[in-house]
Amino acid sequence: MAAPTGIKSPTRARIAARTLRTDRWWLYPSFTALVLLAFVVYATYRAFVGEHYFAEPYLTPFYSPCVTTECVDGSRHLGTWVGDWWPFSPAVLILVIPLSLRLTCYYYRKAYYRSFWMSPPACAVGEPHRRYSGETQFPLILQNIHRYALYVALAYNVLLTYDAVMAFKSPEGEWGHMGLGTLILVVNAVLLGLYSLSCHSCRHIIGGRLRNFSKHPVRYRLWGGVSVLNGRHAQLAWASLVWVGFTDFYIWMVASGTWSDPRFF
Ligand code: FES
Image (cartoon, rainbow, N blue to C red; front, side):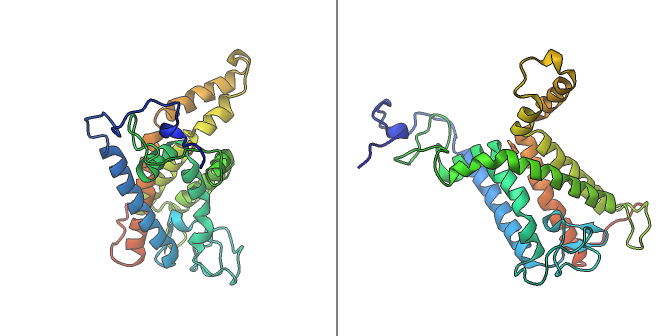
């Protein structure tokens, strides 16, 4: 049998207790697991249900861009790319984009490694696994696609901004409309944009691999701005996650006729 690795490795100190911490270290991983699980259950249900995702002019971000023949009238802002052969709801086609960014995000890795994998569950708390291979083997080696997931997500943010702009067009087709849904979609686009720009890969793309900043003043300024956002990456990750769920829920309620959308203009 192969020698154990990680905290069971023969080179590590032998401590019988799993942890010597006396504070409530389990609160953070438990709460994280609860919120992430709730979001996954909700998003999975909404992605497969295939209805109440468009309340003109509001298209939920879960179904944007809506590009299959199944999309309801008015929701295909970018036309039809996928025919009847697609067996699932239009959201299943799209959600792979934000999912690949969130799943490989450095912050979420920390969050779900601790809360679901318990590898380790917290600082100075031993993990339950005998072996540790980090991100060097399949499937975790796929975390290396993060930079490419960011490129796609940045393009995706442009689409969500387009949806927010379209929310200023009334169901009658006139510009200048503003309802509560418009504001919700605008905040959603802003939060998701800030979340992507605060990404560690984004910071490296802008300011990395430079010998000195003095020869690259523009990149230096951009790097400074992105670094400020980067310091708030965890907060932006949570705020954008909760808000995108709320945005979908609001549009679901309006589309199903449960709530009416207050209109300001
Ligand atoms: Fe979180 Fe890149 S590190 S999105």
